[in-house]
Length: 161
Image (cartoon, rainbow, N blue to C red; front, side, top):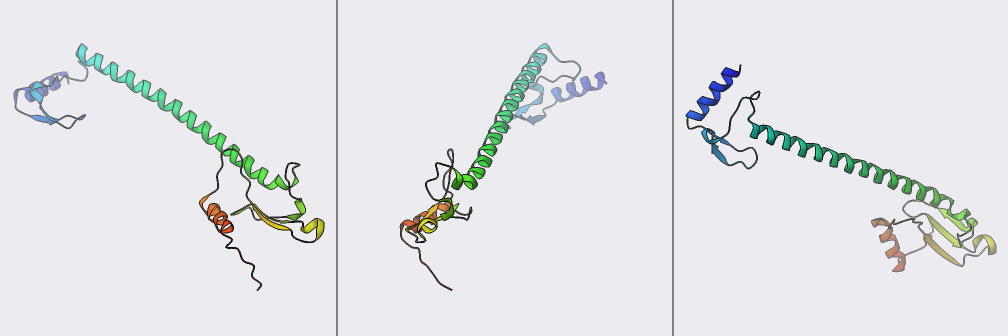
């Protein structure tokens, strides 16, 4: 088999064959290339192969580290979102919640609560609040921002059907 490799390499080097570089795509003459059978690497080829192997090993390690960081970030985000989801539902019973829990009506989507302030205590609504609860770095979604804008523009009506 080695003899066949050597004959092929000799044939390619004697003739005017060209190939395209796999790295840059530029053509080059095969007779100018360092060609060798796979089982007869030159020391230069062995050094280059080892260099490439080390670079690949480093890249693989870096990729593993990035993957582990990404997984941890996803896990942390998931836990944070889940905790926020739980806190949204518990908010009215928490001591820090400034509204009477009996005045709260839960929607959860697209906003968390509509609060009829004073309804339970006085039987008369003093004010209506639209409340969305966020934790950490959470922000209003696009549809929540649109609702907020309409409320601020006083484009809210009461309809009786």
